[in-house]
Length: 432
Image (cartoon, rainbow, N blue to C red; front, side):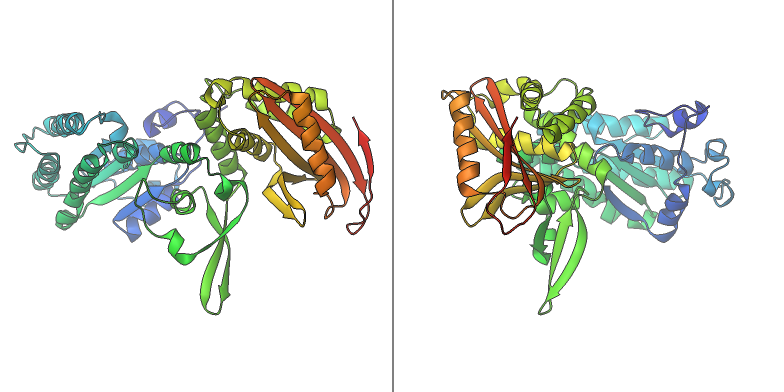
């Protein structure tokens, strides 16, 4: 039985260790045949680094690694190309000076492997020399594969090094334009983990917790750190166009998370970003437990689960305002599989969140106070739900949880409504 290649980013190790490999070489063949420059920006764990490793093996003519794959009989194995693999994650970039020194050393190491001596004292100069020398030496096109292409820039989005780092990285990439005559294949990949930090810093999750409608202009441009969340998430693959509509010739786009795998990866990543969790292995078990508890109205059990989810983030959130706790709750509910409507309005106000799943509607009100007791906060939450009748538009089973955070204490109270008519203002309520 073949082994699952969990965490494997080396194509050679994957193929020589009898691991499962989903053949993507037909797509790779199409990419190489139809173009020369590609930027692949996708969510984390999408196999971008493995793709770089696969391309490296292909351009180097490692025929034995591709036996049985689509590309095996369609590639000219008599042709081998010089390959430059640049992994920005391996380059120190805590300061512009460190980045310059480390990258020059990195490029010189690649050059020495091919008996090439570089003379330039600048990153862009060394890169240009290396490409030209490899081309002159082999008479072949040079394949340039760049992993984590924006790592140095995103690491400095919020500090004084940003401008100098961006300039150096820009000059590095400008070399590609000046060496087009060498026929470079340029595959850039990025792991946009920096966007999680941006979302956490701004505490803006509206673009990922429910579909959003945007205009065409918002999808263009890339100017960190001022870039808005929607175009950033769209450009990095965490949002995709679900629907396009024309209104008097002006297009608008509905953006949403593309699938459950991306949703899970993004929500888990956000939990890490907000809570500094040391491990998320317990997430699967806990979220199944919480889903059962909330749909069964198990307020005591749900409160215990909430304490477990919040315990490791209390140090990070202690003293924060209600919106931070609200965000953590919505992230968890999205992980549980609920459809989120944050701050859902009616004619009497806005519910903190409405979650829908399998015919069950959950309408939550969240309260936070540094000193006020949880029981008093829960009384406030449940009173607000009843007085403002957030549940009027829903039928079927409706669960009304009030959730309270007081300092380090967590509380939960639930009521259930069984509603048969949307227009009716009456329902059967029962406290658990």
